[in-house]
Amino acid sequence: MAQTLALKGSKKLLNAWAFYDWANSVYSLVISSAIFPLFYGLLFRTAAIEQVTIFGGEIARAPLISYVTSLAFVFIAIVTPLVSGVADYLGNKKVFLKFFCYLGAGSCIGLYWFSLEHIYFGLACYFFGLVGFWVSFAINNSYLPDIAYPEQQDGISAKGFSLGYIGSVILLVFNLAMVMEPDFFGITDSGGEVAEIKAMKYSFISVGIWWILFSQYTFAHLPKGYKREGERHHIILNGFKELKQVWRQLGHNRKLKRYLGAFFTYSMAVQTIMLIATYFGEEEIVWGSDDERTMGLIVSILLIQLVAILGATVTARASKIFGNIRTLIVINIIWTLLCVYAYFLQTPMDFYIAAGLVGIVMGGIQALSRSTYSKFLPETTDTTSFFSFYDVAEKIGIIIGTLMYGMVAQLTGSMRNSTIFLAIFFLIGIFLLTRVNKNN
Image (spheres, rainbow, N blue to C red):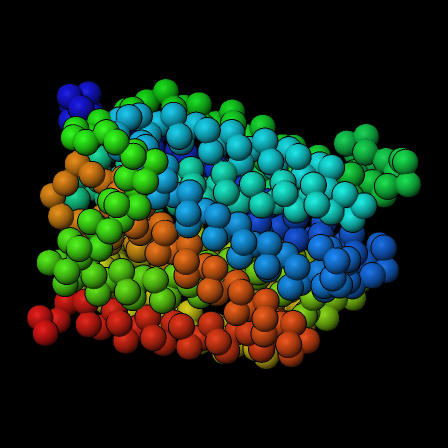
């Protein structure tokens, strides 16, 4: 504890915390957003099928990945408070940060063996990659009020996301070069597998190695965490007990409770869009060829990441001038308009325009949401439980969002119809944000 207090606010500690975004954001870009969705679609197109038999039933590729994603977030929502409870009582949340980091990175490497013939193993790797990323991300988030003072939190939160965008773009450019020019890297057709698919598989390995390698800097400087004193029975369930206690405390903190309600609503839409955007572009946009599709989608994602660096920085500055809540309201209005625009997307150029606009608001809403919550917390050393509550709320929202998206896509036969439902969530979020600072 003394170590944490002595280091709090120091440049070295702040940079070490933010650097974990550099380490793990390659997963969210390369696996969640870029290469894996392309790889997944290419597998089905190469096999000339749109459905696969799994658990005794036929299901189309888009709803399948959406449902697996929803199931993963159910697991994440359960595991996060369990980890929170144990970490609080052992006083060593860094060991859990390491475990889920290595679980996620190892699962990324396991995606190398993803195939339609071994669909269960492949989906398991996809599943645990999600688990490793999001649980470790939640634990790292819980360090924010421990390592930074309130006046530092907006800036360092934005810096973390910016570092993540920069690092992930660097690796994605390398992966893009492998996919587009596999011969240059000595990757050729072999064993009935085309070079493009093999290059994509190598990119999954590169993500795992990058994640493990660069996280070591964070592990070397972050403190172990606070050891919570008191009753040590049933520590496995203490995480859920602490969530209940946090819920009770929210009754005495109207501003925080209202903010969480707004965050739950709009985050449901934001995270769903981030998870399915590439699948949407891969399936709904009219591309001229598979090569154009691959290049177009990756260029779009690179555009999002580069613009997001600027978006996160501008948003942090805007929050200092206009306040966090007003800035979040404006960002949500832009997201609403983007959802309506997405319904009408047809051509690659339409998709590029949408990608640029998404980049402006994507980094900003994530960084500002995290730091706003941290600012609203009461004085406490039990930051893990409060951030566990924050992350569970976010994950439940993702479960609802991805399930709804998958169901609408399956029932209507088009992913674009789901964008209107997501716009409604942003509108509700805007209304709830307007009530955060009210006294009644």
